Each structure stands twice: as C-alpha cells, then as structure tokens.
Amino acid sequence: MRTVHAADLLRLTPDDPPRAGLAVVVAGDRVEAIVPAAELSGAYPGVRVRRWAGTLGPALVHDGPLPPAPTPRERVHALFRLGVAAVVDRHVTDPALRSAAARNDVSVLPVARPPALVTGGRADLAVFGPDGSCLATVVAGRLVHRRA
Image 1: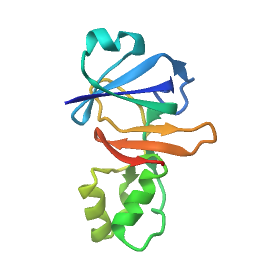
Image 2: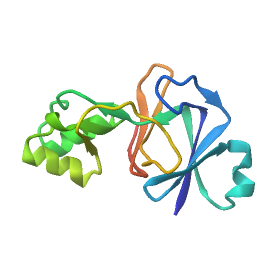
Image 3: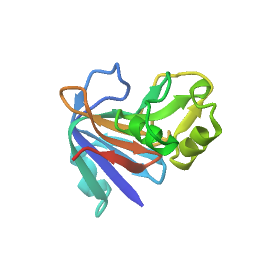
Image 4: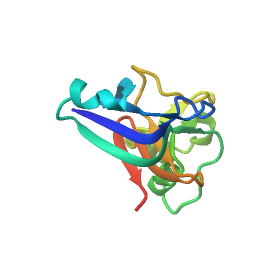
C-alpha cells in the first residue's frame, strides 16, 4: 500500500532549504519517490494522500538520554512527539527500553548520523510547524504521532 505525504514545504535534510511543491511517496517502510506534488494524480491515481500543514522532512536522530516517563513505552512515544525515529545505541542500554524501541520500529544506530530523505531509504518522516514543534511523525512508513 502506498501513501503520499505532502506539505507546503519539504526538506530533504534538516539543513536543506525548504522547497515548495514536492511530496514523498511511501510504499511499505520505504521512500518510493520524491516527486512534484502536481504529478501525483497522474502518476499515482487513487493513492492515499496525507496533506500536512508545516514543513515535511526526515525524522530526527536523538543522541542523548531518552525523555523521562513512567514506562519504557512512554519514553519511546515521547521521542515521537519530538519528531524522532532513531536513537544512538548508548542511550538505550536498558533491555526494557531497547525492547520498546524495537517494538515501535525505532532505529538504534551505533553513532549519530544526519537524517535525510532518500529514494529507497527508510520512510522516517516528521512534520514541523513554524514554531519548530512536531506536528506528526512517521516511523518506517507508519504514522506514530499526530498532534491534535
């Protein structure tokens, strides 16, 4: 199943200048294509389109202790509210926390790396509002957080 994620602006990396008129096509847990939004109806008829207000870009990599919360699951979900889809290995040494990360498809990386949206890459996306707050997080193609 394909889903298209479109927003007013799109960044391929957090440092990339925002670009208008692009959308991300997600198939399963992968980025299938990054295409001009104007081409969606012809190239992908009938596909589900999620339109976001804000700037769409790659989900973040968290290199620090996970936010405090009562349970490991809630600590992982606190990351989603920040637009995070990956953490650095040394911050998830507790077996219960590592298990919660795995159950939620959070990538555990040996070292931090800059996030990027690339065709064929894992579909880890985040939408940020003008104030920098996270409006939505997609991890491995699955919507895991949406601010009401």
